Length: 430
Ligand SMILES: Cc1cc2nc3c(=O)[nH]c(=O)nc-3n(C[C@H](O)[C@H](O)[C@H](O)COP(=O)(O)OP(=O)(O)OC[C@H]3O[C@@H](n4cnc5c(N)ncnc54)[C@H](O)[C@@H]3O)c2cc1C
Image: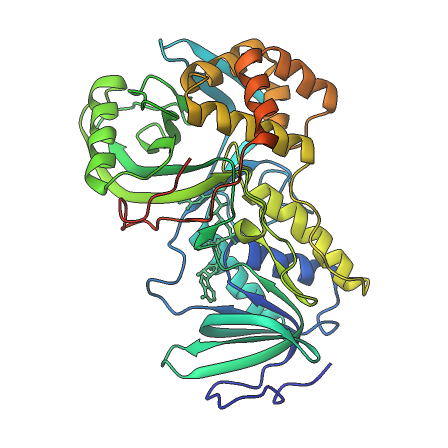
């Protein structure tokens, strides 16, 4: 392992060689560093983390929700495992069918919300205390194998080039282009943090899907309501469909929901969150070179049928950190079981072709199956027999036809991921 100061190139900001270079300090990058600090003694591995300066390249702030226990050692719902405060947690989960039917109940594990800003702040403090981690502000433009590991290059906050080498590099830059796929949908949404004039929410109940929203011709729409107090909640309008909406269209959908579907009375909007999460059966490479691995959404950690990523990232990070601490090749484990990916591919195809009515599909999923089985399935932890039971209670023929035809269909060429703020400019296909 070469030491700091040895990085090559005409760089103004160079010289940080490290055992591990992590590109991107978001969910996957910081989770990996957190697990590394948990498993290795402070001086055992040198780590460099590269994150762009504030601006258009840096990922915007967001909230992450996941099931209690996935945050890792020391868990228990307090966020103690993550080392970051939990903004809210819910024991009861509700899904509302298209006709208003209330489905759901008490969950065996609580659903937790963590704000990315809190997680990053907590990690900043931890990294500052751990002498073995170097933070670098810069925008990475290239990552590739080098003679002694891998080389990362880019430009620093002043626009000057930098380069560094690492024995292993983990690249979490969000993909700008999605892999060739049979089906590519987007989970796209905008949410308002609202404060109502009167009590309107039950802070003990997370409303995962309110399917009473007007449905798009293909795909699905629903509202997601996460109460923080009786008068405060995150209310999101979400679609699973081929292309995102404009801000004006999301705002109109949110107004319709909060005025007509679930009237909130008088309220103020105190903040907003908007995002696009790829839902694709394309294959993401976990390895991009001998010493280069992809993690997070870039490495396929996003579950195609749900968009959930955070819990998978925690599981993967723990295993990668353990491999590094043991001196093994730290190839990230498969993020999802093959059978889950096959079921997700069939669902995406059935939704994209309009063979299944999305709102009816999800209402039926929660109506006909035990809540804990559905939650385990959505979280990638279900047993095979549970999945068979869920499969038999879903619309069998459209799902079976969608699954059967997949091997006969071509994978369409890569699709660009639209970024929030430029809807309608780059559309995905399905
Ligand atoms: C608004 C929103 C809400 C979401 N909510 C949930 C949720 O509740 N539960 C869940 O499981 N999933 C959720 N997801 C999906 C997923 O968990 C998140 O997108 C998560 O942040 C993905 O982690 P990541 O590390 O792959 O990407 P990010 O967290 O986006 O991390 C990538 C990092 O790379 C940095 N970066 C980008 N370009 C460069 C570059 N050129 N050089 C160096 N660094 C770079 C970024 O600044 C960022 O820090 C949500 C997604 C969005 C968009």
